[in-house]
Length: 476
Image (tube, rainbow, N blue to C red; front, side):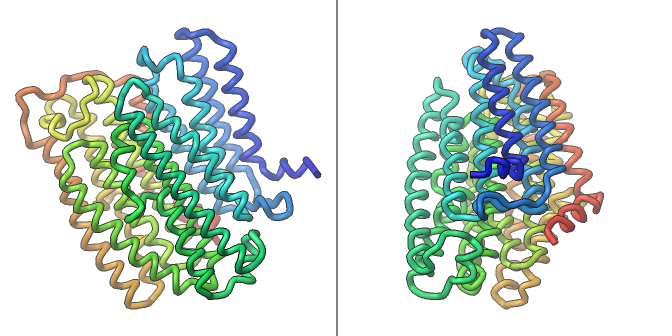
């Protein structure tokens, strides 16, 4: 075997090197404040270097087509790595807790391991490589969900996550076996050229879609989401809601458009149904939530529906639109979770929505930044979320069918519903009052940095068209 082909996997190779360096750093120091500072510094610098590695990476192929990457994939890797760096920064107040501080190295190693799995999943050119990357991302994620082992909800959320992940992986493998039985190969390019419409291939498509639908939290594969988001540590919930979802959405889009292109009329109708159910049902359940992390879980299910709406267009515009939407979603959602995390750490684990009554009176800056993020998620101009939703609607409408127009219309109506429930939090912070409001506290430097990065993204990504132009150039 020609081991020099590993050089074509430059982003993955450098991320693997980062994993080894972080492990050795964790092993070299005893439990102390020095270890915390060293681990944080090493991990932060290396993840920043990883973004640079993805920037300079060129489209490449390795191992006979098992590994295939492109400019669009590299752009998505940059976005997900930047989101992971924000997660590492915002997690610092939680990682300094006495019951977690001695496991800080393990947290970084698990996060990097899941990111490496997502890299492999997005760059796969073969169903076996894709499945290995998917499991590389899923198994460490279950450990992250259960990381706060002293909390019963954390173990419960991890159990539901891993059991549902195991079942969905089995269903997906069953679907892949149907595809292999029909065409006799698992290479994406060969499958696309040999695929034909038959009951076997249709069942393979449905089972494969169901497996990835779980990873993205699309309805009706979403039942694990609320309990897992509530039970997991808030930093892990943020990572699960944006990074994992973004990688799985991009991969599903790529495989549907390239591998299942001969069956486009079948998977488009499947997408229509799933998108409408995801956006509508998630919005209705979000209105009823009283716990903020469960609220954000249903919000993420709805956002997953909007993300997949870009795929309906089935064109180069779909790739750039989905990537842009993920970028905007990363900065807006991570801003909300950063505020939830610092409030949870400073105020005794409070995550109920009514705890935020009068939040503006005691912590006006945090309330303002959270409001900007919620407005972006709702798609209110001039924030970046409005532009991302506009491009998604335009990409879906470009398909030109009455079904596509109908789905876009339903999504537009649901945008109004989502605005209502996002404003419920704004109302609690600015209008409602409480006899026992959250105390006034000062955010640490890491929280400020994470919020500054996210808020800059919310304000700048939508204003400067060069960001979308960069993504669109990579997609073409």
